[in-house]
Length: 491
Image 1 (cartoon, one colour):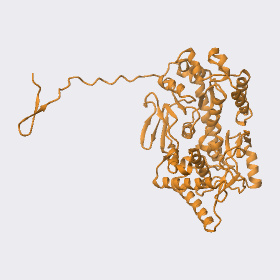
Image 2 (cartoon, one colour):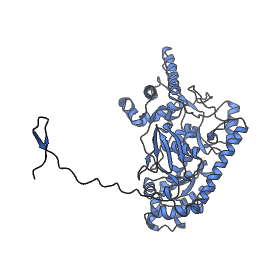
Image 3 (cartoon, helix red, strand yellow):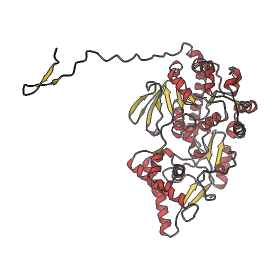
Image 4 (cartoon, helix red, strand yellow):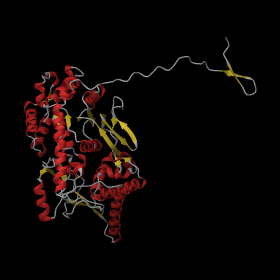
């Protein structure tokens, strides 16, 4: 039978019509449904007690702040209310005028300095006697940050017009200016300051990079857009030469202005992931993290655009490695035991730390960490809890206090009979790092952490989370984690 042909407008016969397809599109595959585990109430009983205690503590803190006539915001317990003289709209972060020697880029010498420790009372005493304080930045909107940059520009212009060249006054981010406060369980930036002079041969290039970054950031803020750190670097490659040069100056600019680094609208690329029982609006778009596929949702660098966070999760599971995260995501562990699973794929980035800090403060649920049983796993955990020295000036918004170490702990290696072939010998560098951690205040204040770390250094054995797969690929989600949660086995 000849093929059917289309009729043209003039009545002629056109080309043959394509054969009609009688086949219908196949229906979409049925959605995988994972119900809450039958033993969820038993497994989560200890976790719920921890959650209730956390919420009671937050409530009591809020009542105490209200009774004292202070700010009763939920975030008060994370802040340094009595000690820190916070910046407002002025580009000023500290009241002290103490100067340190010229370099302020946060670099340190080859000798690792133990973090200085001061209690709140000692800080308060120092503040009242000699006028010193610490650098603690605050959230600012784009207009306030632009005004801060413009104030710096005016000062530079005045110095140049008076034929003095110009110099920038910047808080020092060196190791000797880092202070650990036990009551806050985080690192803060001290009051030492330094200068960066354009007339000094050693500092002129760094001063030029700083002023160029100020100019570019101001242009970004005017347009009300965000750019990546890589974008910033490529705007003037010949001046910056290496991206680490422009990246380091961003922290200097934030401390000069008195704002958080995210307020500069220069962000890092996506790194962190989240999946589980949490939903929110991101720049007007509704995001449900139970419906984002197996891989979950990338944590956006624009945390300020997230709002209306809602969740029925019992806890947050913070995972060091992406491989372990993917196991939990694929097994829908968050549906069987309602939780939120987060990973930064190793060393945490700013966006993941800020996201974790914010949802913990808003939801007031416990955070349980699953990291490798080695010194670096514990260092990563300490960054989430106490902050990094490089960004200690913004530790209030980047740290999450009282994270519980769920696993993999050195004591688990024998408790769960981990095979010898899955245990690794610690290198000399591993042992050295472990001993250095034993000297840090944020470790020594937790005796159980000290005991675990001492065991690790003594046995000279380490293991990765994936070592548990020797018992079965789903052992972590089906046996290890449910048992840990049921027994409340965290420290």
